[in-house]
Image (cartoon, rainbow, N blue to C red; front, side, top):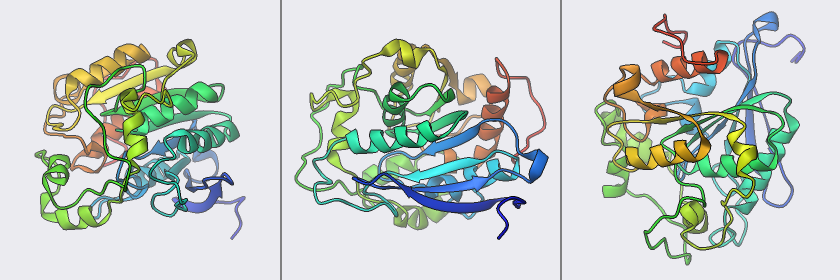
Length: 299
């Protein structure tokens, strides 16, 4: 294949990092001159792989594919130990450090990038941006978990074994919203993977490790940021997302109230109508402030 010519939605893939390798899938945006703007790095949340950015349980194209067709090159990752990334022996106790390090390596390879991160992916990405902020144009957080600087009171998960979401209340909480394709719940459940409890426990510094503490806050607040929350998110309360937005000095959007997009929950990137969220994010990337209503590029 001639990489110089490119095709719409052309993908390649590679591993990054030697200690805890991370699988990365790159999709080239558009063809020739239609490729424009910064590259997009898409970071999934806990118990999810990069698949949540490439497809949906009901078979619609995911954000990575939509971005590529719209002309935006993007990079979808599987955290170390999840999806197609190798799992090391110390997976349950290694903490967030290896994932942060390899995300920072990826950002350091790119000249101009926007990071879009979901749930636990947001504090991982925030720490990586602190480490390698020069190339990052903007940071978008969807239903973010707390960085280490925002204390959390919950007791944490035991680190004796990986945490697995089954077909129980936890998974149903992720699939509770009006827009979630619930008739495809089994397909969604089969896409989930188990989570290192030490990564979960680093959020909000529950474990006291300080791994996800932002030491140089000014580096992060210098990056233009957007935090998006959804009214029907049963996992991440709106108040928590507001705390993260305040910490990042970010713009804050509540989907129903501010963008006229009600009915979304925690899994907003895969819920029905998520193309409209992506369209508004794309507008935000391209402008100093979100524009008014326009025709959607994404469906």
